[in-house]
Image (cartoon, rainbow, N blue to C red; front, side):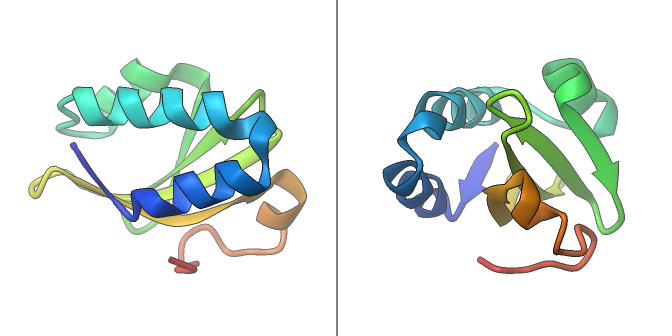
Length: 101
């Protein structure tokens, strides 16, 4: 899968160094895995992912300290990062519509 807006991950890791290794792990899993549907995502990430509307998945990063919302286009093999923030920041957004990046 291709990750669109990887720069978001890198910039966030600069501001939150404690999230760096977890974000890198997430990126490597997404990059090397062929995700064809939500079942593939769930098999890869287990309990660390939930699904919302608009082909979006909410990933728990670093033991749920951070949340990453990604819109997944299975046909184009692309993952678009729509939000990355602390758990408390996540509580302030609508996961189905947020598009910060």
